[in-house]
Image (cartoon, rainbow over all chains, first blue to last red):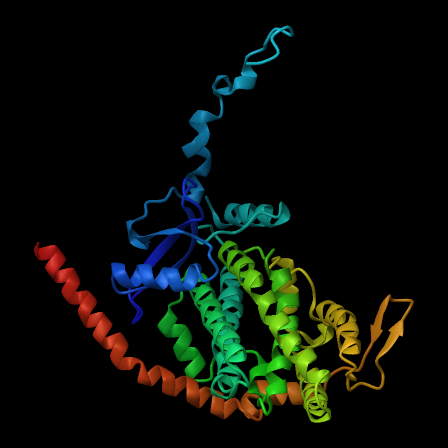
Length: 95
Length: 313
């Protein structure tokens, strides 16, 4: 929707080095630098993160909720992908 | 899929306590209710910056000033989280701000009362933020995902607000006789307006039924109000301050306090624009928006230019 606030950006914050970036919200900004600075001021006022990604919302491609069933269906019948599918002899204690 | 199927999926999610997300199908009235509630919540955060901002330049110490600035900045942030949550339902920031500035959209009645002394800043943190937290803790489990997530973030930040308010009250209530008098006076003036924050009594609350049915709210206005009173009495007793209600009495049978209802005629009057500061608050809001117009225009022109040079490259 057109707006005087600039485009929407999604914000991802990494709490500590080595951890994944987690989506934490969104904001309006007119360019990359402003998006990053706004994200810092809005989402990390209390040491919530040490690294931030900002991504234009319209650059995100998302699966649609209506197709959830058929979209993820192919993995549902492949129980052999889980370690619990394979019975282990009782004598083997660690594997 | 026809609409009936969509409705079944929606109802199914609610009954399993699952969140509704922006792209999910939802009944038009659910969407409308959320846009109204979330945008008014956002407006309350933004307008709520005004009575406190009023005291930044007059805070009694540098420490108090720093704390108050951090708190007011938080309120601005809370407004931003909530505006984007509302935008995910298909409205725009401009539309919402326009509704606020033309008086079409409401904000919490509490911010139409004046902050007369430093004790008012303490009382706002202690009682007003305390009441807001009670409401917002419940809203963390609201059925709409973006609203719920905004609330979780807000609640984390809000408890600092309540504690800094209570700290101010502690200093004043245990200070000089004049300070104690200011603290009592602030409590006298803010008590009933704070009770009004939970909204009209359940029997006459026009929006409650749907909000509960759709799990936007999980508890009623009266339930939250009762819990707030139960929790606050002890805090006032510690300060040796008197809650201005002669009917306030422990009721063993209901394991809660009996208390007087606020003046609901006053509530309606303030909500309809006739409170002591409605005009001042809206004028300040409109002025701030107008003063920022050149910034938005310059930023839009800059972004357009950036975009063109990016596409040319």
